Image (cartoon, rainbow, N blue to C red; front, side, top):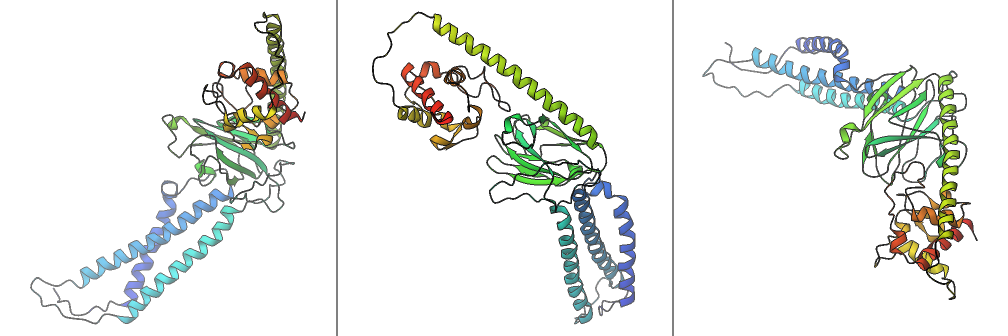
Length: 413
């Protein structure tokens, strides 16, 4: 055993050890890439960039960790001393200390350069390929602090991803401003290959998190806020994911998947969905008209329990007050707490936008949808959300004033 007298390891030996360990680690990192790195599939560029950036930093981290650890172990073994030896004060090695300081700084610079080069590929989507969808829809740029990243030509297939307890709803953009007739699907999103797909991610109720691991990073779906991401799949297949944010007791069942098909197959699927929606709207309109006619006939045939009111008509301002504030004394909730109505200045989104869904509807239809909300349900909204007690919590005069106000506000009478 030699006493510990100085710390002057041979530079060539240290350099050889670091290079040797690095040579062993880099193939090992590649071999276990699927085990240690984020998933990537379908050839989407952003997921590939995330994966390669992770592997670069992981490999460099392994070189540092095992290089320093190996050097430390080698030093301890080479310069160990026997029990009872007298320690000798040594100055150290200035060149070595300068070397590891400069080396660490250069390593940070290298990581920064690689990261910024990859971030551009992760954030900014490319144009759709020539073999992709021939007419992808334009993205509607929303207002707010977050903005979607568009391809250089400004065109992509825009899909609205809406998290709801406990499923995902996908609404496809089209050329009109009425979102109620858009093609939509639940749980599985269908997209064309070789086409840049931009996602507008939001939530209806609580916070969710959209994540298809093979297609890129995860993005939170937050009520009242919109996040944006994108992908471009080159290989057909089904890519699976799940909500990545605890959102309630059925969080584990909130699955998601993306099915990539050829552009021709996507066009056929889209046309079929559009035709089915139009047919359902026609059937729904016929059913609504039948119910309205039935209710009108029943009201006409009912015995008159009170003479016609001879007093002055209820002012529209009273109807507006009921719409905005409700009638707390009788349990009639404010309509404006759930609906958007431009004339009333309300912007709630729990229920449908009345300026859109009631445009062109008759006063009888507005009254029927108020009294029997579960018989007239707008697309994308569930039953039993709107209270069904307006027929009992409002007097006849209050109900007529509310219907009159909504009719005038929507139809401009």
